[in-house]
Image (cartoon, rainbow, N blue to C red; front, top):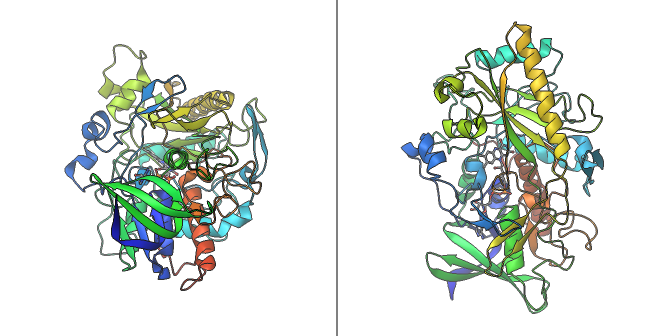
Length: 532
Ligand SMILES: Cc1cc2nc3c(=O)[nH]c(=O)nc-3n(C[C@H](O)[C@H](O)[C@H](O)COP(=O)(O)OP(=O)(O)OC[C@H]3O[C@@H](n4cnc5c(N)ncnc54)[C@H](O)[C@@H]3O)c2cc1C
């Protein structure tokens, strides 16, 4: 084991995704010495970024990892170990949780518990995150949208013709579709720049770097500061606590076959909800026999990942849309036909590849060529809330590998959401006298961990939560967590904007706590990244 020559830092950040990348940017100009570690490397900007076969069939950018379910069955998690984490391939739909999501909400499957802070505590950080990630949207169009202190930084994307028509038809049928807020670095203010045409998006890295991901928006500007060091291919194996057990005294890293040790005044963990919990469990020691920060026995529990699925409407009308992500519907967010309880969120996704379509199709539509079907689909992504359950948890197997045990709950909401969406699309198609579409339906299974959250929840009571309200571990004085694991419940909107906003909130708290330069975080510290 070697001690790195520059082994002592004020802050060591573990992970560069939505949480870690955003946090790095927010602390970079503080003057503190910062070391950023990620087990992955930079994804090269290469032709294969947009090669569907490479990205999906050959899994070129996916983590080469195996996790196990409750029955010890192995699965390949759909997750990415790279600089920028999963934001490198995300769909950049950046929505705020709704105000009521911060309170107790009754669902078909139980109660979604309240957060220890309210929406008002998050609002300024949502505003800052929207600016930093160049969000394009339209305030007031989403009927469940929470209060916001400023307009979106950019106007909404202009839909392609088929989707613009669908939007109008849904409105005629009585629904309230809206343009989903999307984080993209367009050059719309530069009259001399060629327009950007968005295309391959969900699941693809973006070689044009138009997608506002945590590498381009977070880490790269952070790396421009001399006090920030980035080490890639640096797998954090364990955290070691000091003799008092109150501080993390060392971060043990495996890099290119060599073991290194770093010291930090403060450790900021952002390895993703599953890996962060696993790392704390692996770091058990005499002071923390059940795992670091685990006196409550809550580390790894309450794993959530939304009930997500695809609903593909095969219509008579061709859909030549290239990008497609112009429409979302929250009409069923707080309830729906025959249900006073929440169902979830509907949004169009990037055009799926033929493999995804074949999977969703199953045995449906025999006799039709897949390409013919693909030319006529409207492709929806549905999300219903997954409720925290302590039995749904991340644990370690005897060989140290990760087990994710899940007993799905609240599926009644997902099923009703699917039904309500099919009815809405059928009604919209009928507006122009079109036949009811054929629907292909598939709910994502355990390997779909892209919305993973909740394994280290924050709260005021150290017996029932792992982190305090500023996401510092109750049990340790210098360990913070800024990835999706802090969620005590997850609403039904995509998680990233909330992770980013929280990372900014925690960075502000730490800047003040450490008394660093320009202590309070504001727009000047994390101004919008320049458009490409
Ligand atoms: C295809 C796809 C589409 C998506 N679309 C959207 C969307 O439209 N909107 C939205 O809000 N969300 C979307 N998501 C989800 C979003 O990407 C995640 O919620 C978000 O990235 C999670 O942020 P995080 O910081 O918790 O973790 P991650 O982004 O997963 O980052 C974790 C980082 O930690 C690193 N790491 C892990 N373990 C270690 C270790 N032991 N040592 C060192 N480094 C480690 C990883 O390499 C990674 O870089 C999508 C995800 C996918 C996969």
